[in-house]
Image 1: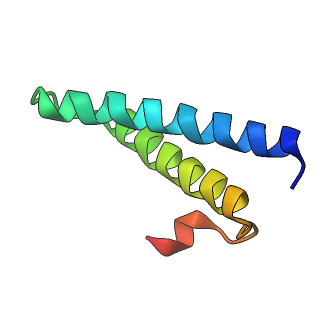
Image 2: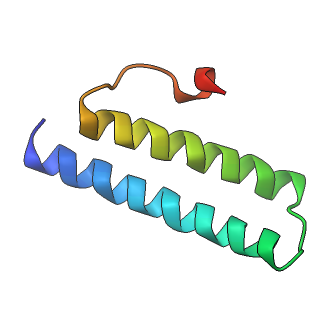
Length: 67
């Protein structure tokens, strides 16, 4: 994997983690997620898994199939 692709994957992974942390903070404050926020959180988790798989050289599998 080239350095630029690795950097992009790491940036996507970090962005997904930030969004996931925001969702987690809402839950901690006892503010339930809306259906849309829940869907976005699940999508971010899938993106983070996908980015991590690419970084680790395990790309190509659909992260959503692991749920």
